[in-house]
Length: 138
Image 1 (cartoon, one colour):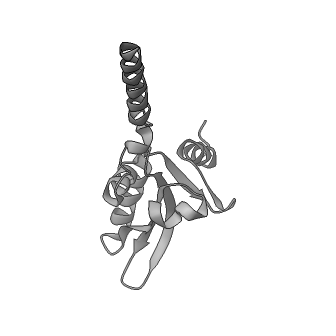
Image 2: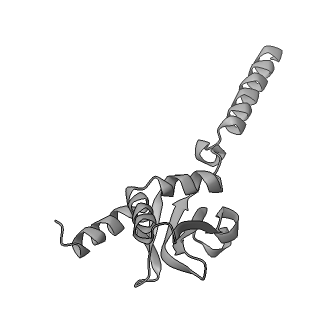
């Protein structure tokens, strides 16, 4: 009887330990920092081309700027998830003019782009497709 009782206790202890250690790995992954999220955006070919064009067209009088508008903790309560939102614009001595807003999911690195006509973010793929259509490209 003692051996049976000891055996059951060992099995129950093993099962209990296994349940505690079985945690979802996705929540354990750290969120992107502001600099990491900004770097994701600055590597986009569209952002790089826009930045080069601004610098070249203005001969250095206008500079491209990138600023974080909100981070994962700022907007989690609004239901938009854990995302970074960045403002890209061009700045001279008197003003800064918005070019576009981008959103980076802090957990996955997925990028979305602001659609001012719909008042919401759309996927990067949708934005790229729309830009191709606007330029008359297939």
